[in-house]
Image 1 (cartoon, one colour):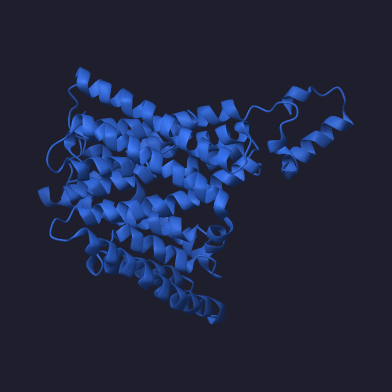
Image 2 (spheres, rainbow, N blue to C red):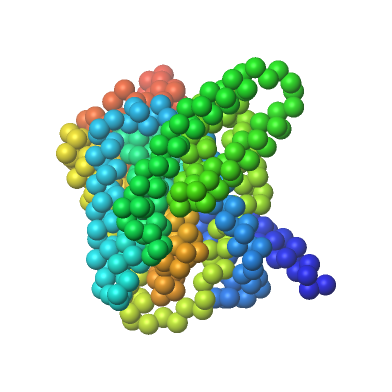
Length: 418
């Protein structure tokens, strides 16, 4: 009877994450916040209903691969090329400044002989940007197609790539048996390999998806997912590069092909029904009972303040340098605050490798939740429209034009309602 406990654990996780996800949506928060809360409540830190197990750990690791594969599928290589110098400068400063600041914060609390790798990893966690929350908020406010909105999207794409490079470097440095030059050579070798395989396999998938006239579409998603797993294995086993890097590259290779949308939907179903809830809940399950001390509270406050200031400040500076207005720069900075699931993926990788001390786990998790919740609030504040706001010039979507047309037809309509 004991051996079948995992069935009940998984069922409880799925139901709890769904319930709390719906509740968080009611509060106008992303469902990932609810999944996190569910894991915390079910785990040892509160009710202790579900205990971490090897199965849950393995499923959560596959969940990371699925999430990053899906991110690659939804990222256009063309968009990467079109992002341009402006978005690169914004993303670069939005990565370097948090990396440096959080490294210094880590030094304050941990300055042992090998603390530099831990502190560097903490910096990598906070370089992440989860643009999904920002996109949903901008869509709701009809601000998605503004100049600043487009800049946020482009910078977030580059931010993801830079974050993967940073993660790969730090995880490589963690292996003391490998020299830093060797790590850099292996990373370079992987990206050369990825480009070569990408060119060939993109053509293969493109030809196959275009010439296969059979109705059995299931094979596309099965082969694509297997390809992601293989790329994850090759990146980790052959090059010492994080497996999520390989899965992200696999998604990029398949993106833009004829059946990419179908594959994305099927992978999304797999992720939604099983993998993602277990992954996000597993983060909460790893939390142990929190004994609040002034040191812990102080660390949490420092992390929360620094997480906002470094992203807003870094991206604001990058936007000003690339000739955006101060208002647009502030909007871009606020749109990049949320760390969301991207930071959780990086943190999960660090815990698996022993790079993240237990002392930092709870404050970092709480800080990630804080940035996820606060981002929509900030966006609604900074995107308040004012007369002469050029950010919205020629960027009205169809629904906005229709609303304005109705106002012109009926002068008695209250303009503020539009």
